[in-house]
Length: 472
Image (tube, rainbow, N blue to C red; front, side, top):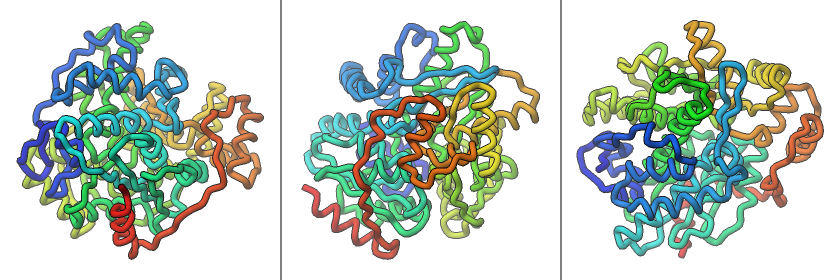
């Protein structure tokens, strides 16, 4: 059963999945984490492992139902293993970008629509549902792709105008479908995210849900690749059974790394979770000084998916950190909304947090390529630099999985800038990268002319209402 971080109402898996966000504004959490022994997964490929783990969280569905949807969902990935691990000395890059939009969001967003379809069937829910989601770049394209062709579901994606990469924008704005709308909002990601949250509170008469990681069914599939990484290292004889490892995660909204928290709480031998941020270092400051303070300058960086000052999923960690006290969690979140900050004595000492500026991000991209002949995107570079800082600070030599969240092709201008290569056209830059680094261009990077639809922040709520009412 699931309930809100701010209240005690119990919901079944299908109810929580369809609802997305709790009526009181909180996020859904599970009252008792499922028991899962990684030894029972040693012979499983990614799809089978995902079916078992997701079914453990959502037992109202049969294993056969889950497995059928998982097998179909991951058939669109360009490698049979779904994800891959590449070793560079004591670190392993966990490649999560082999899906249809070349980003880690695909791992969850090809599954979420199918779980919503099963949930509607279980509950006998026949009305059309509109997915309303905000994106800092990757969620938008992945959500549009995932919900394509899902009967009874429409989708509206909001993204910050000028706040995503040209490739991310092309992926979203080139999408065509009667059940989809993409809107560029004149503001930053936090404005888009706040708009979504307020919309849920202000329009409960509409049939809406979310594809952001605030939806528990978006979060749970991300737990899988933590288990898969550990099991795969065991199978390769890179670690001993029970040996602890670290995970190093670039994160803005805190969903990716929170999935690692769940994996650790479920018994996976994780030593530390390294939280990597860019210049918008609100999470770094939170873990280092116990204060979450969004009252700071907002920076547009070369790792735009992390340009976030309100990390929504941190609320789930705060909930567990208060010993599951809904009232205390609600008070802290109200303080954030009303005062812009809150103080929190984090009891989880296995988080380490570091931030990286733009110049260092480019330097790391170049250094990793020169040393390992391996090209990484700027978000992965932020993570790898955090790993280097962590290793130097702690002298911890445990093997570390660096979560690689996107293909370098999604951020071609940052790649070329790292190597001092000039190309003013971001779409032509794809060809330059392919020629310079001898890396095949993914077939999915083929977009028509981008046509944007811009909406002022002050007009966005009423505009979205009209869009939703037009969906069949």
